[in-house]
Image 1 (cartoon, one colour):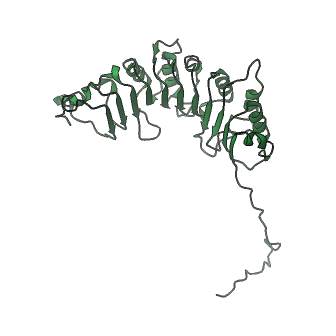
Image 2 (cartoon, rainbow, N blue to C red; image 1 turned 90 degrees about the horizontal axis):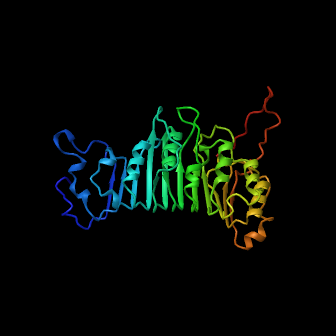
Image 3 (cartoon, helix red, strand yellow; image 1 turned 120 degrees about the horizontal axis):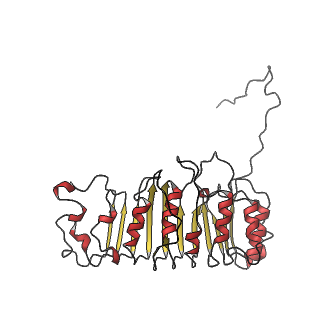
Length: 330
């Protein structure tokens, strides 16, 4: 593609580059990403790349014209950008409307919690995945950016990294995103205290919360328990997430609250849609108590572990004179 120039593709609007595992060329001999003249096309407003190996800030794009940007890593746990480079990239892309970025910070990177210095005035959809030292990425990005028009946020990360205990700082993100409507997060990013604080900082504009959990099955119960859910029911002077309409729990490890508390929450908040998958058997069939709400439009979808079938042991098991099994001839 090195022979193509912007003049050859004057109407090119979108570029998608996937899975380049080796450098595109030997930059010491004058060939590299800067040699791809077609990337200088004046009409390019969308750029997507996955699993590629290059320094994104050096791409010969008109970044101030990009409205759609996606820089992701194919392999789980990896990341394409350190958070400081992501900040530099965002500073050069002031027109972004949608963005999906995987960042990865190593130990020793210090983040900032200063007031946001950069505003992405038009960004309405952000998918951010943080690997490595998750707290550094959160501090760097949400301490340095504000999103006054952000409506849809998907945030992925895991604080249980090889780098040990991490302190997460969320308020800059929440205070700088007053129009947030949908939130998709993995619950294992939080301690119980930080989850409670996070939920109570959310904007009244929030309509939908979607939860998942990336912890191994062997780990303990979720921090999203009865106490957390109760705190969302009884909040003075006004309820937390007062505009909430949809709660979706797509991983059975996400929550450890009871059916009774869930029923009280649904009744108190008058939700429109509740989807829950639980890593336990049903405790209380709440469908009958919620039937009036269902008939009024509530979509209720609850999935539990099936009841364990009783195990029957023969009375002679373990005795020295246990009879031989009886087989019927074919």
